[in-house]
Length: 323
Image: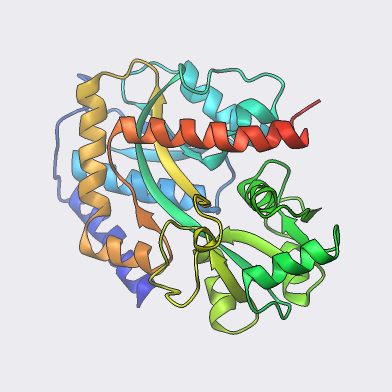
C-alpha cells in the first residue's frame, strides 16, 4: 500500500510535466535543465530523497530537474561542485547530516561549510532508534551492563564520523560509560547480519532502516532518538526520557551555491513545501519514519550549526578527525 501511494505520487509528478504545467522560471533561460547533485552513490537514502525532490520541483515549477550522482571523499567532492557553481538556481545539491561534521573529519575542505552555500531548506529528518538483538529489556539495562563491565558493550557503525558512530559515543558520555565501537565500511556487507546474529550489542540508525526487523522480532527497539516518542513505536521510550536533552536524528536538505537570490530560494522552498505535503507523499514518508521538515533557510542553518557544535565536540574529544 505504501509503495503504491508513493508510485502514485511520482506518477502524478511525471504526468503534470507531460501535460505541460508551468511555473515561474528560475532564470531567464527558460527550458534549461537544472541539476541536483547528490554527493553519494545511487540507491541510498540521500539519493532516494533527492529524486523525490527533483520530481517535486519538476512538477511544481514546470522545469526539468535531474539528479546527478557524484560520490567520493565522504560526500565532499559533489558538495564542492555545488559550491563552485553559479548561484542561478540551475545547480543545486542535496546533503546529508555529514554536512555538519565534515569540517571536523577532514584536515581541509574545498569549501566553507557555511559561507559557501545557500541553505535552501531541510527536506526530511528521521529519528534514530537504538536496537539490539540481545536480551536487553531496556536502555537502562544495557547501560548498567556497560557500567558494570567497562569496554564490553559494543555498537556497530558504518564509518568513522557517521551519525551512527557519533550518537552512541554521545550517549556513552551522557551515561558515563564507555561503549565500544565496531566499525564497518558502509551500510552493506556484514553490518546488519552481524547485528542480527548478536556479534555486537547495539546499533543506532534511522527508524525506517530498522523498522522491518523490529516488526518481525529479529531486533528489539530499546529507545528512540526523537524529542518525542515515535507514532510508529509508541511504547518505546525516547533516550531523552532518561537523559534529557539527548536527540539523535538524520536529515536530508537542499542547498545551492552562496549568493542564490532570495526570490529563487523562496520559489524552490515553496515548491517543495507543496510537493512534500501532498497527501500521498506525506502518508508514504511518515509511514517510513520520516518527518517532513520543509521550512525556512534560517531553521536549516540553525540545525546544521547546532549539530556541528554538538557533534564536533565529540569528534575532537575522541580524536576522530583526519590526522
